[in-house]
Amino acid sequence: MIPKEITAFYNRYKTRLYNTSLRITGDSFDAEEIVQDTIIKYLRTNTAKLTEAQTSAWLTKACTRASIDMLRMRRGLKVKLEKYAEEDPEEDSSQQWDSLLQSQSPQEMIGRIKRQMLLMPDGYRAVLSLLLFEGYDYSEASQILGVEESTVRSQYLRGKRKLVEMIKNEK
Image (cartoon, rainbow, N blue to C red; front, side):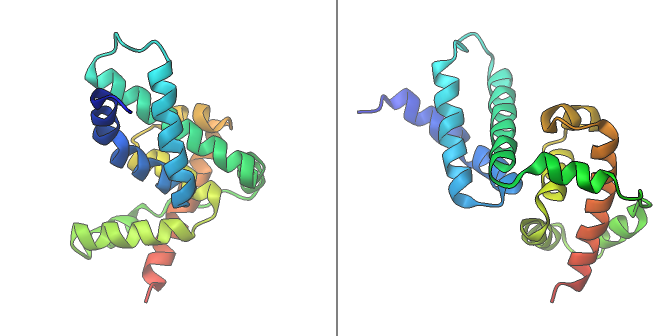
């Protein structure tokens, strides 16, 4: 039988961790597995002295890394990111992005963004998830992904442009 404290702990964090992992992996089964592994890892690690905020940060970072590791293992994420980085850099699509975000209600736009993110290539999806949803900066995302910061920047710009195009073409 699982102690009530562990069940309560799991219930407190499972939804946020699942959403984080799902945005990165794009696979619900992988996301569920990663959430469970992350919480088990936390419980096995001597983290009893962490505050609530530190615990939340620890879980989010561990979940993000596990999700990216899953992508690397299954789809060769690093190879794809490096391949895209060799292409010519593209301009930022900030004006299109801002215009798109203002054209609909936040709930409608979030739904459209989430749907289209699942259809994007792994490299773009991972970078956009880390920067847009998880709040990491270029340097932190670079460390998590194990690629150069310039690769993260170019992937972010290209991914954002591709996301805008996909949302505009959505029927």
